[in-house]
Amino acid sequence: MLEIQLTQDLVRKESITPNDAGCLKYIEDFLSERGFISEILTYGRVKNLWSVKRNSGPLLVFLGHVDVVPTGPVEQWEHNPFSGFDDGTFINGRGTGDMKGGIACFMSALSRVNVDELNYSVGFLITADEEGPSKDGTVKVVEELIKREEKIDYCLIGEPSTLEIVGDNIRIGRRGSINIELEIFGKQGHAAYPARVDNPIHKVVPFLDKLLSEVWDEGNEHFPPTSLQVTNITAGVGAHNVTPNNLNLKFNLRFSTQITAEEIQEKVSRFLTNEGIKHKVSFDVNAEPFYSEPKLFTQIVNKSIQDIQNFETTLSCSGGTSDGRFIAKTGCEIVELGPKFETIHKINEKIEKSELERLTDIYHQILLNLNEETNN
Ligand SMILES: [Zn+2]
Image (tube, rainbow, N blue to C red; front, side):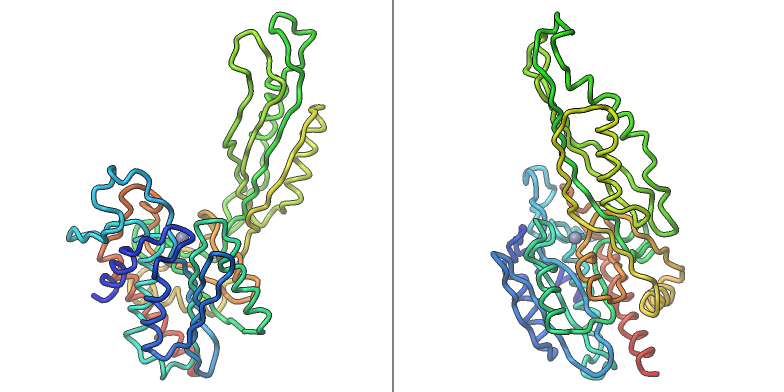
């Protein structure tokens, strides 16, 4: 099966973010054999591939990334993380699930059709900066495409989306993410003289209580409710008899479209004021949420999954952030459909060979069903 070979070839290139390690060239060569015209768009240290086969009709773009997260301790891996080792059932290695497998499946699906005869154009936007800061990747390419007035109609993202069986869950949006860093100021002193100290640890307790009991929203049909996690708290000088001068707290919210980043900021600031806390706070909205209204393309993806798997998929907006938030700015209809996310970013990341085959079948079916739709 071609998708298995392609996955292994890509995994063997050690493309730890933001290096593409030759992955982009590999994909470009594959596409140029099929009549695609490619460009490498470089921003800072990051290379991005923009490759299009132009026919008449709408433009479908496959969006993906070849960069992977670091392996962690290599000796804890069952197989070398860049070996693409085939154990009979799984292809093992960093990036198999996130998301070289998805790219390989779409390439393989494409090789099953005659691209010259499609009633639509096909594009590839592949970055090497999704797992890193995401500043010189898809976001920049999309800016350039908007400047060029390139019209993208449909976007398929091969990020892992499956819960149990390939295609059982697809994403049409993602939550936003906001990082909040707080410093609470107090007054250092001797633990024996409570009247002379101002203890920031005592100050943070009622604030944290407010923060953690707050219902930010209830979510909606597609979005889970907004959630908060405290990720870091530090204070104290290390002695039993000294109260600290200040306290640092970090927390993150994953927010739905039912609330805005501004509303979150206002609420947090109000809690701080109400508790009379002397502080410095900074807010970093590292991802805005996006939601793509399900229309024709979502129907086609749904039908394609049904054709291959005989079940109806579920639409959701769960998971971390994705580059979908950038391409959403073009106004295209977006669907994320990929393999299971169970082992991604972990030690012993792997993907089932049958999963790759099934995903390729579904992608192939999408190409066929879209052709049928654009024929009318
Ligand atoms: Zn990914």
